[in-house]
Image 1 (cartoon, rainbow, N blue to C red):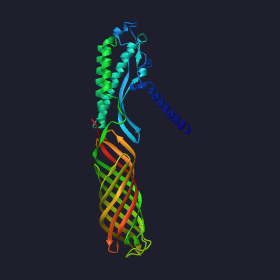
Image 2: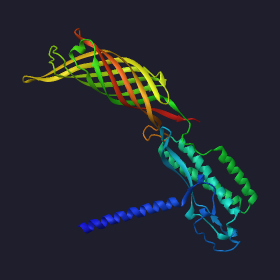
Image 3: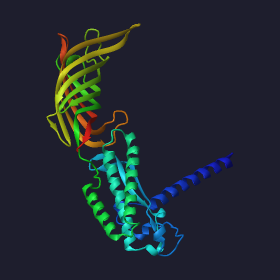
Amino acid sequence: MRLKKLRIERSVALFLCICFFVVAKAQDNERLWSDGKLTWEDFKGQGKDPVGGKIAALYHDVSYLEFIISYKEVKKKHKDSTIMRLVAVCTVVQNKSWILPYYKTAQYLKYNQIIFDIAELYSRKLQFELDNIVSSHEAMYKLHGIYEECKKNIKEFRSATAGGQYIAIMDDWQRKIEDELSTIPASSVTPAYVKRNFGYGFHVGLGCGVFTGSLNEYFSPAYNILFGFDVAYKRAVLFLNATIAFSSVKSDYRQWVKGQAAHYALLDLSCGYAVIDNAKWKLTPFAGLGLSELSSQRTNNDANLRISYIDYNFIFGLNADYKFKKTISFIPDAFFRVRENVEYSVRGRLYIARANYYADLQGFSVNLAVEFSGFGNFIKLKK
């Protein structure tokens, strides 16, 4: 049994080594258009010359350039942002590209470079299409269409130049392709975009709170757990927040007994306006209404006794967000088909809620919390 297990482990290890070698070998034999002009070192394949000598060009291609236009999903750091994007790539496959030895001249190197330039031109056109797709499922169809156009253009170039023999026509094509490349610059890391007006977010954190008035006479400071959601239009924000707090009774009050555990819950809906919203900071005062509850459950002799006081009242406060990270996805979401900008921040939240349970049990709940917040906007690319 142990011998069989050892053989399986060796087989798996060998398979992984082979996969690693194949991938590494493939990468070694490919290089990007952006790596520079072609050299004869890029033609490592073996071509066949069934005729031989100079007359080969009359009947057969004397060289062949294998190129690939493709795209890949790239996740890249840029300053304080993580950018996710479909990026078009143009590469030459060196071990499948070849030139007959007699034709290793500047003329045929230039001929193949123009073919590579045409492929790069269509790669840039593909990038434009990828940046403007509605759904990620469109990407493969865009690639197929662009690749077919590219092959058609290269076929026209080969025919017009008789496989690189007509130098004057080849020069005209070179100027034409270089002019087109200059009008479609290589893709930048971050395409220009604008945020849409609608925003959405969530927050979760921990905090503490103290009571004022007669509430402070009967209840000790509380430890809070917070969570909630934000919905925004431009700088106006609607906050839905929930606070669950853990306190205790300081002195007897009605059915409450000193030392008894008490719970304070607050559900509030408030409106705010971001008076400051820049690359690092967002400052949003807010005000609204809250539903608060003081409750406890204890065993009184043989019966469970639940005590609960509920109040509706106003709430106001201030959110201060320090933005420490941003994620920009230029890949349309599979479900909503939108591009998204998400900012992650540490939020300091100061909020005060009024409570009026009874004439002799009222005051304010003053709370301070530190939260983790994520806030997103749909984005659209600038034309």
